[in-house]
Length: 298
Image (tube, rainbow, N blue to C red; front, side, top):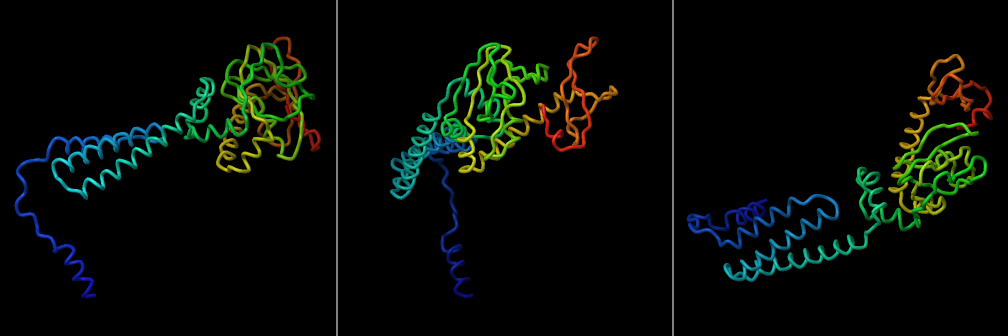
């Protein structure tokens, strides 16, 4: 214990207390270095925030090196700041290379800004989502079908970039799909990775549309390797399904005329022709007791 006390006493009291402070201040280079260091600490998150911070840190350490070489004439102060300067320059080169490699078309950047960036997804993660699965941007002409009821297999996942898609079942209108929404989120969520299925609705382009599409198998391979991206898509798809359910819920009514919540279990719904006096498409709901009927979905 005595040795420890003597060590701490020597560490604390081993240096003389400053009795006389210097009256003159350090040169302008030293103060400039301090200002640049403070500015570097104000950088935000993300690639551009890191690039901003490291640039100002590098300038700060450069000024400190000049100050240590010309004013202080201290080799150790110069050496340490020069090492920190080299580290900052290496980080700047690394970040600049990553930014250069993460470049997308304007359409994909708009999708990133509107859908992925608000969730805190970085450009590098978005690059994995696009490049690993060989995502494609496809054009769908007006009145062309993305999927046909009972015929088109469920083998991809698509996100609408521009235009408007009309969803129908047995020729009856259900709802529209607008930009930044998935085209086939209910179909995707209804199947397990090992299962196959076909569309139970028809999706038709009302205007010229552009959408980004991922192949189902490649997406599942990416999910198996990256659980973070898997949870991300799970969040996006389920949120998209919830939006579609709320939109459909506005059109659902019972035979008695009362409105009905389609989220309640043990019910199925089917589209019926519009009544003569109605201008808004409606969906009539019937209660069933068999699991076979309960499996019929819009």
